Image 1: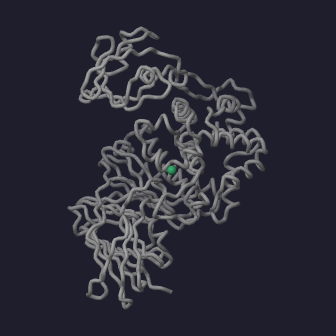
Image 2 (image 1 turned 90 degrees about the vertical axis):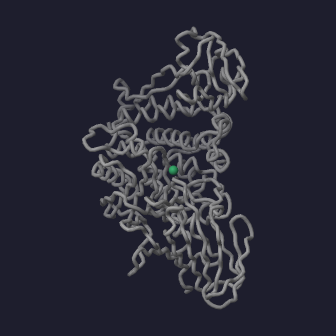
Image 3 (image 1 turned 135 degrees about the vertical axis):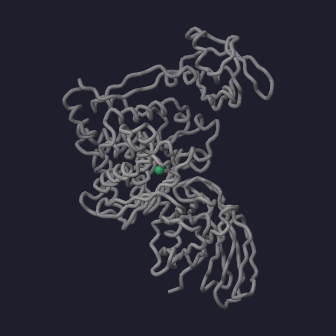
Length: 579
Ligand SMILES: [Zn+2]
């Protein structure tokens, strides 16, 4: 067996946000290629991590050997064929997201996709990581197995595993719990002193226990250990799933505080994020699109199935909070109502199906701009509604989405999932007609037929007036300093018909200066046209906005349990939501 690839990652230059990496290849090829991934699995966008590398140098023994850059992310070394090859380079790390790498004198974080060059042809050998020059008092969190008898040394079976283990470094809060017989570690960086760590641990444990039970009953999950790495900041939100860990970013304000009884909306959102990423440990990290069985780190990896892997995961994230007893049904239904309203008021759902949106994630969802709401639909939100609809239909047939997920888990031992397999299992569980319906929901561009399905599950709906600006098709950012700025103009809306444009600064309505757009409802009669004064490219303009009928924009939907529902509907709801 070929000897292990070794990465020494030195933090001596933390103040300048630079990791110094020394990569040793004990048995290099005569012509040895190296490359850095251009994307990180789970975040479907080409990010060109190689642009942050600098100062690459190759040596054999003490002699420099020729190193040639072949493209934006690939290097070639012509070796002498004798002895170990050493590459050294700097990796600049100053991005606070969960997808890349960060280093300063108070905290470090990295995904090996940002730091560890792939040694072509040797991806299958063990890969070791040794951390050096850690500031005193710093701790290390990672799910990568420790290297025996080495302080701050770690080892992965191969390159795929290496890049699936992020590292959190610094002086962070640390707690532990057990779920499903497996140790779980939870680290939190950046928390305020009032942070209630015990509560976070207790709630996370309930989520993990519910999910392990969901997939395995009383059995064990498919990992030996799991690590949550939560970084809290003044602002920010995100998570990235890995095989035995997750990196999370949240607003520190959303952490639970000691003495605080109720769960704030922000904390429920954080618990939903924890639940979401943990569910991915099964759904996308192990059960995965057939196209992802062998990943290509050098370019986009396309799949039409993100509606399943992200959408169904989004359906289960909040549902698991309900099942773990962390939110009640009313709060759960409120979250669903918000998702339904959001999807209905997005014109892009008439432009792309969730299958198309999945395929285009690389250039649409992940590269959102002012036109995104008009050109695509989120496979997270609409995908979660497809899951909801499928679940309610399966339950009416005496089955459930839970049963489908567990069937797929068993039916795909290699993990490779295709749409055909999903459809055939749905047909077996719920009948061929339901499989046809699912196909139409996934590939169609119509509103999902949710109303009847929700009514049959004992859920009543009510409609409220949407905010005036939203009803007119405007997405705004408003502030005392920035004024009223147009972020997006929705297709088919009154604002679009009047010629309002993203980037416009809105100044006055019918002669009155506005600081908040919706204030103008005080002086504009309902349903009447009005004059809008705005600034575009430094010049004043006046447009006339004529309200027009746009039902999807004008009303938001609320869902709640219906105590008057027929007995069959109440029974279905009880089976679904537990009350
Ligand atoms: Zn996800």
